[in-house]
Length: 277
Image (cartoon, rainbow, N blue to C red; front, top):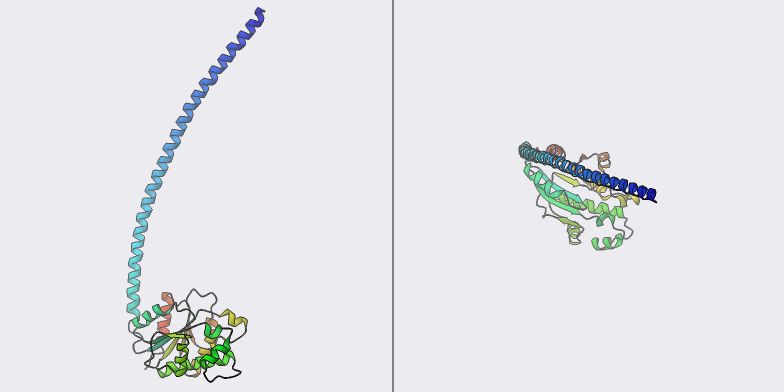
């Protein structure tokens, strides 16, 4: 009986001792964890401060670079304007846009800066050469009507009227009819004949390609060449599929990426060769 009592007492003593050790270690570990947390927090704060200083330095560097770029752009713009100033003096230019007119405003400003006279900016709607129901257009356009006329014949007539208008310096009656039908839009009435026409293209016309029909731009270029009116075909850098190679096969001057400085300089150089003597 006394032996069991002593055994239970010894077990209780060891349990109490173990519990005390466990509590002591736990408290000590808590202090260690707190110390580690404080150390990590200080390290994070130090790194954050370093990153903030670095960010401030980068902001100052970026601001300085932006200021340098602005100065460089201003200098380039000044040199560019002086380089092309009056190089096209006496040249009369007309612009024909195919589809959306996204180029003309900048192009007109460029030509005027170079001293050229912009006689008109004509926008030809894609309906003119891509619409499926051609009979209604023919009936409205040709009031007397022409049975059996094909789409390409219609293209040729329209191209001939436009080129004749640019050469004569006044819109022909059929060209006026096109304006009334809102198939073409003109920034102003023609007053003088044009020395050269700039064709602003938006690349290849996929619907026309799929149907294996002549594109209106190709018909227009060929008509202008046949009638002795020089053509310069230009495209912006945003075109999905360029038609420049096809224009070059017709023998006209071309400019890619007309919305870049290099494209603008190339256009001025080409037009300068078309100045009247």
